[in-house]
Image (cartoon, rainbow, N blue to C red):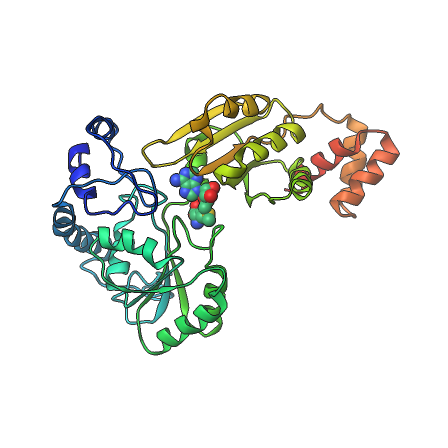
Length: 370
Ligand code: SAM
């Protein structure tokens, strides 16, 4: 494990890209203290000249080591083979053509798996949302694969080209700008097209902002619902939040800085004030912040400091508070109706029969069906 000082050196070659700013020595010291290394798209640029050399020297050995450790000397398994066990194709040196869907960092360039580096190194072609953005990551790890754009506006046409490349025996990987492809990012169409053409699609797990935020949120909910970005228009956003209100799970959203205030205000206005709000900002980056508070306090917390509205956000809200229990008769009627009817209809009829609140019955019905 590299220490903070070494990480600074390693980062030097990684262009911060985007609206990068030079940081002063005080900030570097701070960085060193927390052993945190940025950063794909913002905030910080490190100027150390020897960084790429340091990382390049180290990394192939790690990759080979990972093969030895997990693959028994780099022998590659295939799905369905090997003594009845199902084994995924492991990496690009596998001879079976496949599309490798590779999760990449959400900020900290070191958050990439050894297997992902192996696969990207071996790729002939890396499909990515923004080729310049991808080069930041690839150059940082000394990866020279050809990049091709694949984004929401060209995914259909680009998928055809990926299939052609696979037919030509080329090794193809898919990444997005950050995190896991297909999660609020392009990728779904390509996976479907590649599979429809008869090729395997091999996922390489790694960072995703939603799961990263949840892992540290400390919410007690056993389940979560990932809702992605809420609609930009106020009415549609309100309807969406209302439709999620009774879901018996924590809710997880993505949000951009220019809409974070409206989103938190809408959540606070519609959902129960005692729910727990988690604002996870700039995860894995220099200014990472994870704030936890009652939902009702969210708007004031955001308004109190301009910095709290900067960066990239995951917003999580705990599930609905416990309802007052249904009485035995309402529970019995609901269960009987649920055995024959869909949830909504059963709750409505049970409310008419027993006089219990329809929402309570609906929520209980969801629990019973789960
Ligand atoms: N595919 C990505 C994933 O697996 O998380 C998500 C891509 S989506 C286009 C980008 C959104 O993810 C951002 O607007 C933000 O809501 C969230 N996000 C990405 N990186 C983040 C980070 N470092 N901290 C907090 N949220 C982040």
